Length: 296
Image 1 (cartoon, rainbow, N blue to C red):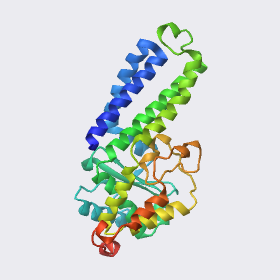
Image 2 (cartoon, rainbow, N blue to C red; image 1 turned 180 degrees about the horizontal axis):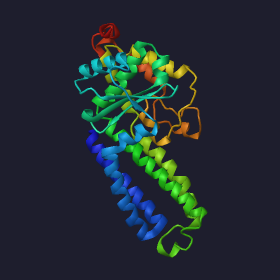
Image 3 (cartoon, rainbow, N blue to C red; image 1 turned 90 degrees about the horizontal axis):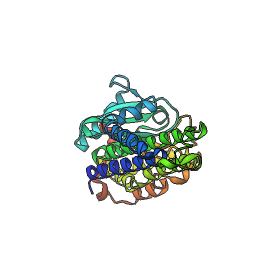
Image 4 (tube, rainbow, N blue to C red; image 1 turned 180 degrees about the vertical axis):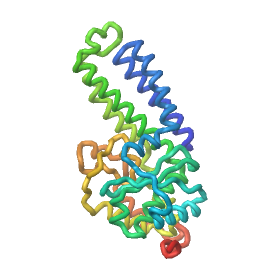
């Protein structure tokens, strides 16, 4: 199933889910309000969700003059991938991570953390960039960004439900189809869990495929394997406030080990990814070459 169809299915499921929540909270009036809200969210998710995610992490757009090595790397990898050069952002945090976003390759963005640039060597950075550009090449970025936006909407509705219960809104709505206080509180607990499950529904195979495709750009999986080892073994400072709705977008789960959300991992185990990258023969990834030397 191609990602355009997956995107339509995801948006449809999320629309229905939000309408059901609206009906449970406010009966027929709630369903109407939720339908309008869902339509608005679908529009915003398609056209602006990338900007919302970038703003969420205070990502800063950079120019070639600010980070020439980073720009040269991205340009070379996109040339090999046969896609336009995306905009490049830096997230001002010492955490080590990266993600790609945008609605298509022509409107794509690659974002990396300052910590990743400072703590990885050129080869490892190149491996990470290859993985993110692979997501763009494979057209994973739209469905991932929409999932983040819609999951965030569910969490926002959960917060609204919580406050409505606290202030007594909906106590007399049982006869109109509302949940009442107890049901509203239960929903405020269940909805965020549903948002996490939606992220998990986005197949982990996306990450394996991006690893493999990125390795083909590099001619070998070793650069990305080394980068993943660095990400796995270096203690994370967790200076970045991470919205659980966006966790699946990063190259590694930024919530790992932090809280209960880590139990609902949206990523395959890093050790499995490393093993797959190193288990392939040269023919699996194309002719091996010293990529970084070609860029210098």
